[in-house]
Length: 85
Image (tube, rainbow, N blue to C red):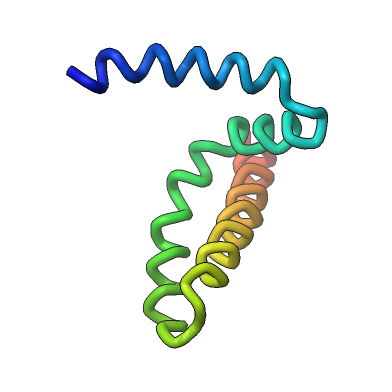
């Protein structure tokens, strides 16, 4: 029930945020939206690999590293997919 009520509110919030977002933030949202399928496909593998490989490192640093690596992998995957298509 909460999901039914919360989803339209979340969508309206996203629309409002995109209308008032500064240009660099809008471009970041645009990148994430354009590469969302690739991010979905690679982020889980990257985050678990980093978590297992670097257990003693600060978890916030690992989160930032995982996010950056996921974005780079998604961008490369999108380039390869576009070349094939």
